[in-house]
Image (cartoon, rainbow over the protein chains, first blue to last red):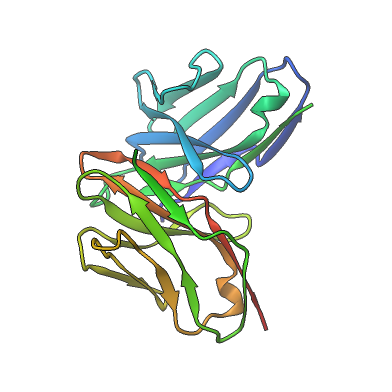
Length: 116
Length: 113
């Protein structure tokens, strides 16, 4: 149980276009979803936290107009990278918490974004 | 600030060798400590955890002990298998912000037969 999927697993886009990444909890209802970004040989950096039906809370230094997060249901959150540029190329990972004992986060497999 | 430092990889071992991956942390208060594992093509999975000093987390033959005096949570396994090849992440959660996981950079383990 507690499976989280992401789609797509990888995407290549042209500079200036927008890209949407989906994160789904497949077998549980996710009260909270998280979006992380990972650069090569660096740790996962939390970008934002979202709760279903409310606005996302962004970490310091993350542009909310650049990285739009929509948590429309208890099983789906989307991250849209708007007007993408090459510096946005990265590995984006989502996670979700349900009702486990200590708010355990269950992670998706990640999405590799390459902006040309 | 709050942070996690773990040894750079890759760590390359032969099957049945002893494994240690070092992890130290800096944190205010009393964090909970975690090891996550990421197998190729999969998401991070919780491997083990410890919530207070001197606790030992264990799972699948892996162990780590929460050492407050040395601010460490080193991961160990007595005899690794090829199937243990993965990336291992050390992480912490602060007691006053249980949503926010703070990760180390990850250590890639490669086990050869």
